[in-house]
Image (cartoon, rainbow, N blue to C red; front, side, top):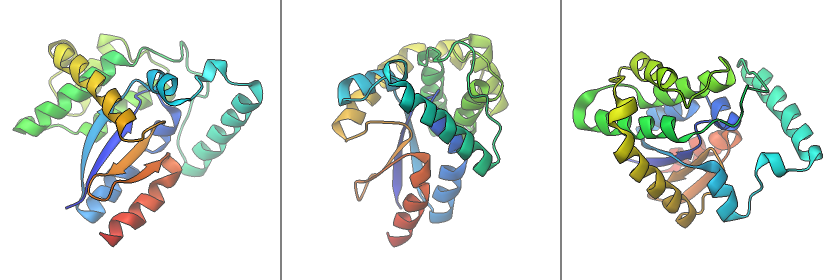
Length: 203
């Protein structure tokens, strides 16, 4: 069975636009997914990327146009300029890590749904995903214990740092980024999910 390591930022607009396509592709091919939230700004700093705030206006204008086009193409709601963007991604990332551990131990819950809820909170609801009540609501809406927002802090912080190191070691430089573990095939961007689908079909 194929396995996908999914490296992503909880506030990336491109990750939001991926929607549930990864999960549907994985289900189609009988593949499993490990969700690996990462510190995207630190990743940029360590892999030669440029933080959005430091990018030339030409690039940022094009980014806005592309986001608008993709949101319309996919039929997804999107607030192009969320308040207080970018938010602190750490608390929500820790919660995703803790929820995944709970699900792996038989606790139930939908990790993919949790990730999408957090991204939707940024890009549709314009909420601050660093706030406990926002994270708690996303956890509970996807079948997890809302208390993971606090009980998962320590283990989440440790894993979050490890995810960044692993991402760099394995060639990740942006979000969303998908790596098929057995073949080491890498796919960067929600617009490469079709290629991931095709690749899984060859395994």
